[in-house]
Length: 233
Image 1 (cartoon, rainbow, N blue to C red):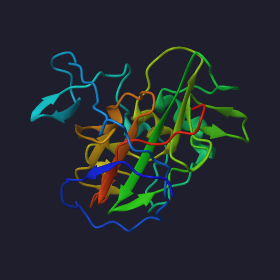
Image 2: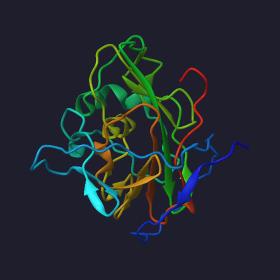
Image 3: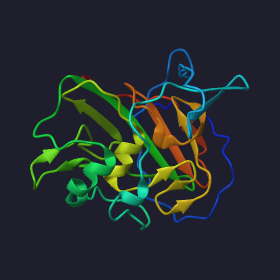
Image 4: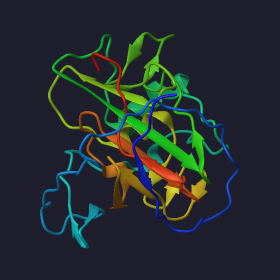
């Protein structure tokens, strides 16, 4: 089993007691310099629904991705069941417009990076399935997709642009905001590279080799701060 780099979680109490999901162990590595600090920048004043990073007791705003927040009322057939949540590739074409993603016939090469996503419901890990963002029957994929259930998100675009975590959840059909993960309601706890975040995780800009952790209800005992990406990713 690969070594983990983690910090103690300090999340809010459970909003509602959700059913546990099946655990699965990802590969993680220990950072040489401790937890990776997320570089923060100031957003334009008055931006609504922004993200806040708690750092030394002083909240700071990280860089924002371009594009609008997801209008969840426009996303067809959001998933309302308990985990595991399937990829729902058959609905991908109908979710392209609200997600702001495109139907591609091949993976883009102009922008190419990878992030890792860990989801927890009441302390139990939820699997991020293979083929989110890929419709094999129709023969297309989007700029954000998964190839396997490891939790690795592939960002592969033919043009240079920014993408958000909310776009990935939109094409998956799992509603995400500061107080919602799928069917579960109540303030979420979430981290990026081991740093506790505040605000709406759907607005998080995706960046190379982020370790993103989102927890509904009771958070995990430890929070991973990095992920051991396979060679070449």
